[in-house]
Length: 415
Image (tube, rainbow, N blue to C red; front, side, top):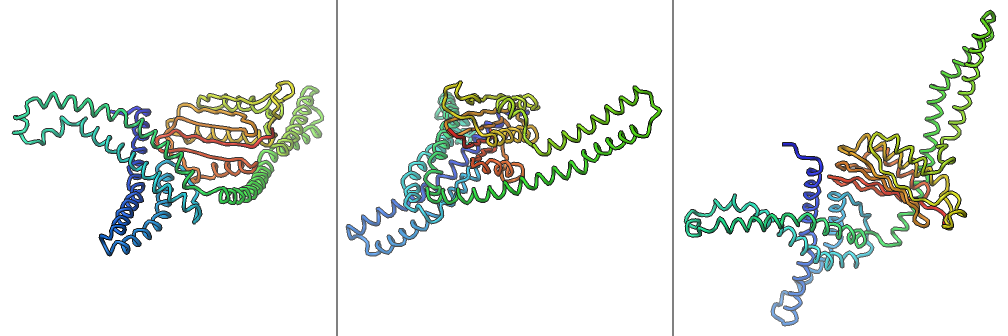
């Protein structure tokens, strides 16, 4: 029997969340166990009950100090491997916040994870009670003749528990994804240094990419379309100069074709010099994106909420986005829709949302495919991220196994 794609994605998402939470139990409860052992040893030292307690306490404290960076690395790997969330490593800084996360926040999260996994195990056991109850000795079933009715209620309780586990696991995973990057990531100074380094690299990458793109376009046009048009114009010019005995109507056709060929060469040169969608300058980003959505092979739900190009008429006080920012937004949507059409397996539609929030132009492109896209696996997404960073924007992509895939781009705009 073939499982429907939506059901398969839901099961994949539940399995992903459950694996994430189950792996978090030992990572979260390890530091709590060390703290519990430390408190017990301190109690022994205060009461003078064990002369070896100070030595053991010193070993436990050293183990706890060494466990903090190791647990941080393990948690970062867990977020990246199972949820596709990349948390920058904080290095040797912020040890107190990391220790607080593993000791107190992690202890609470570990207890919740253990309870949820226990609820899942109990639900599975209760829902399958009619299967495993036959392993009970026959004498017990004879003595408890009403076990079938009791097993029916136990099965209902197990099914109810299994029904609430996906929602609870999703809520707990969402809570961890909110707390983890904040407490395990770098502090403001590290983030600023990393941002400067990223900007420096992205500027250089954007310049190199633009230069390489111009060289490629120049080479392709010179060796391909331009050579064909030049050859056509030369042949038509030779025909017009040598074929003197043609009827006037035929000569008029040759002269018109010769003019058209020269005009095409001129337009091709203008295209090389421009390399910018004309509709952006003429009608704005909304119309340009509407054209992209209309040409997409998949249905696209487009929502654009931007101030008009004449802010004085709108009274919003917001200036329109710069042409470079609009061009980046246009190419982000164009590349994203192309990737959805080519690579998003089982995708049936795409959602494009472009909004202006103060000084930020936000572009969100999402699809309902099975996910699993790797932003570092191909040159297309890396080039797109470089294009976004070239205007000091931010590029984030989330594509966990089971979907959905979401690309979130924020571009700075003047206010």
